[in-house]
Length: 236
Ligand code: SF4
Image 1: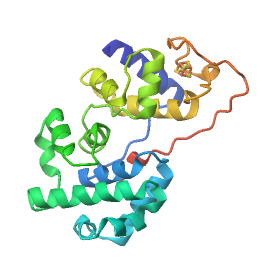
Image 2: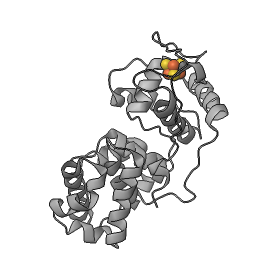
Image 3: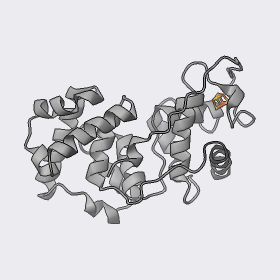
């Protein structure tokens, strides 16, 4: 599988380029909250919600003192406000209760599986959110799997799975060293811009020759819209 991932990664880099990366690894708590906000919405709206929180409150300790309904009002623009506010409140209060402070620096020395176990103990934090903390904050070679990564990897034929978490398990440990960030980010761009849920734009797809999908679409009228703003590369 490593060779195939390398091939896909190289083809995507030739097409989209090497994705921009945050100069400094963001704090893991910032990343955790940013990823919760990003669930089921576009990156621009979740970034606005993240900035609303950061601009209004200097520390996560201050946010931890708010009720879920107060958090909900501030993050409303990200959608699913009630659910996300509850998850944020739960994570912040949970960290304070368990560790006495709202910090995740101790994860630096833990192995990937332990980080996932520790983070998914919190209600509202799933494997995808935990793996975003691994990749973007802890600089691990792990590829988070959202709906785009799941759909594209199944269509290409790298995996044959029913859920994003199963796809994550299949590719976990199989990513060639140093490639997880570009592989993850460019697959999301592929899924947003070209390999959309309906009517994939296979005519312009850099993976067309390599992809096993039976229902390729070669309709010339599909529009290619660029979408390269990635929330998680803008968390700081
Ligand atoms: S060839 Fe088509 S189905 Fe396959 S990855 Fe590209 S856009 Fe998706």
